[in-house]
Amino acid sequence: MPFEDKGPALSGSASCTFHADDVAASQNFRKQYETRPNVVKAEEMPWERSADGLIKHLVHHRLNTRECCVEAYMQFLKAGERSGKHRHMWEEIIFVVEGSGYDLHWDLKFDCIDAFEWEWSPEPKKHEWQRGDFIYVPPFTIHQHFNADAKSEARLIVISNRMVKEMGFDWFDQIENAPWAWRVAALLLTFAPMSLAQPAAYAQSPAEFYKGRNVELYIGYSVGGAYDLYARVLARHLSKHIPGSPTIIPKNMEGAGSLRLANWLYNVGAKDGTVLATIGRGTAFDPLLGSKGAQFRADKFTWVGSANNEVSVCVAWKTSGITDFEETLSRELIVGGTGQAADTDQFPRILNGVLGTKFRIVTGYPGGNDVTLAMERGEVKGRCGWSWSSVLSTHKRWIEDKLITVLVQLSLNKHPDLPDVPLVMDFAKTEDQQQMFKLIFARQVMGRPYLAPPDVPKERAEALRKAFMDTMKDNEFLADAEKSQLEINPVDGAEVEKLVKELYQTPKPLADKAAQFIRH
Image (cartoon, rainbow, N blue to C red; front, side):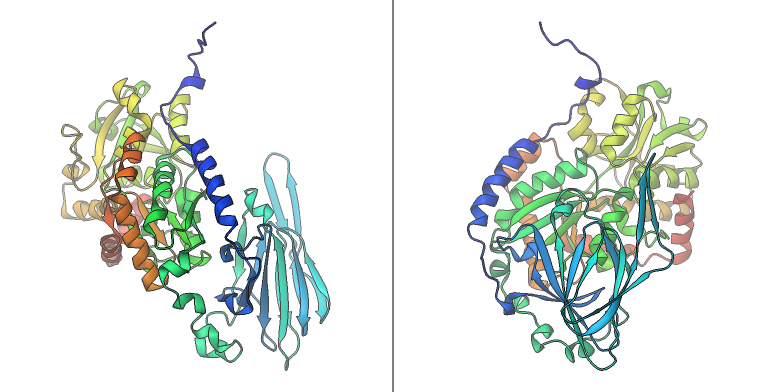
């Protein structure tokens, strides 16, 4: 008999190519794997001045060897020095090559009854070691290494199992930096080989560097939302425009409206051009607007470009009883949010603060797709700060079936599709209101931003920017984007960088006032 279920199982109109992507990625991986070396020469192993101190990577997935399960690096500790302090979800074995000292381990107590419960010992355990010993570090134990010898250097080989990361537990927190980790290079060069001043990889051309490598493209939201769809379509076409044609691997790192990813990218992400990311367009301005959770300066990122110059909207679900934006000045509308850094939270808050609207935000959803599901379930009655391109690409049917009403456009200019929907700038009555709206909504120019960590080598940054804009003009990419109903109106990386730098020059009293509004 025909399938007649008309319930939630058949709801939604989003489409994807996940299966096809996985098949293609597997085929590409197997071809690439055959080209990977079995031997990595000592001079090819890169140095890093990390937050944990000076290390040399021996085995790492970005070295693109045939080893896929283990990572290892050599840790150097000058006489009397200590490493940084960190924790991670994978266990670790450390072999002492030379020197003597001790480790401090803050052991973890863990339980999961109604939720994850983590508790670290208030006082650490001390574990002494010397040449020839090995040290075991349990999962998520906070640990730190100390060279107890005031005259001699210590050297450790740190080995970890990468499989835990691939299972979705890539949890890595830097608790404290090594006290000497960010001193001037001259100090490091008294300890490290002269090659550290200019690692060999940095002298390579972009084509030489990227050939046979993976480039990870991190997505700051959950699978199925618009940021995810844009990034996965881009990932299918970007490789052929980057010199050396590396493999692009999309990965999701959702949390706090993409603030988690922005922090990770700035403080942890590799600065060699092998890590890209897409974050919420407003996340870049969290430090400017006083977010205590923001651990970055967006004007220091390497901006690659934006796939769209956006217009966002506020919508109301059909059962909300609200059909006009001015009704929100007197009636409450419950909207869903993904985190303090996200447009879904900041846009309704700035409207509340500047205009006196009565949006109530239910926040904490992993991604935009989860907010739309919450609307269907009746948990919330609307969504504010939703890109019009996302509405069309994921829920166009809702417009056609009149399940939602578009209340207002949130940008500096109207979208051609919405000539009869009011623009937020038209509601600003004073110069201060105009300026605050411009501060918040100018980000729409970078509607689908792509970026890399700070200090990516100039030639690689330029290669990535050019590859991005070439992809935006690629006929196959444009056909793929049209198939997925993604709006493409690209902005190059230099223009995005200019915008970010300009907004970071906003007078502090004005920024503080806007910040006060979006926090309440």
